[in-house]
Image (cartoon, rainbow, N blue to C red; front, side):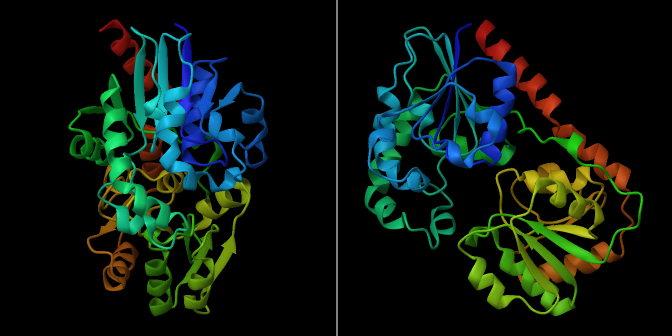
Length: 359
């Protein structure tokens, strides 16, 4: 098959870009179509790809502000020429699924989520974002455009049950589930006993609820290391007590070492999947997670971590103290994480694509 890949934007490196790396291994040479492209924020291997940005690339707007271009993205993706391809895989949490393959060609959407700022998590996701005014004005039109794009998708593949449920509510479409890839091979459990600190690895944005982790560790006087950057940094730094350290962004090797040494990984937000908790388990460490969303699919309560039922400081403090009474086997954490390895992703997505094509 002649295969093309589409993604919402390609301006920084995160979970969507990790998916793209695996797709390029599965379909080497497939061109990657996107709204805007900024190689400066991307690793070297992605810079070698055949990337074809849309007409939005010509606008005099910095690509790092690409989300402010959302109202134009449905039009930009529909204009892309996909006539040379038999099969298009769109990796989407926005409008790359709007692409229009040739007659008889397939559009399969690997759905990271229906746009959270348009549907059921709008207030939480947009809190404090500069693009909010633009999206508030355009929200009704964008919802119509998003539903229209969904009608052009031949099949949805979701990253979790949480996202599959959202696809059903937003688009009235079913979705099969293939969990996103986690490179467990780069993480190794430590033979030493864990050290008395807790760890958060996250973008510092409001809906991640890092404030809960900080307040809980302030109250318990437990050491907490927060890795990451984002618009909430100043507010969280002001909240942090003497046992909390905001480390900023760190290299992968340093983060991997912190995973392996921490007492536990803290995951207080509501996420569609959540790669960081899987990475912590791959390093043999348990997870303290809010018991909704993707965490309930990646963490085994009572075996590889504990859940808390409400996003409150009291509930998180109680979960931390419950973990104190729990004996966690690092090998069990590692085995659980391996269910989400990159090899599993390639095998399961490849099987799903083959089945779709044959049907």
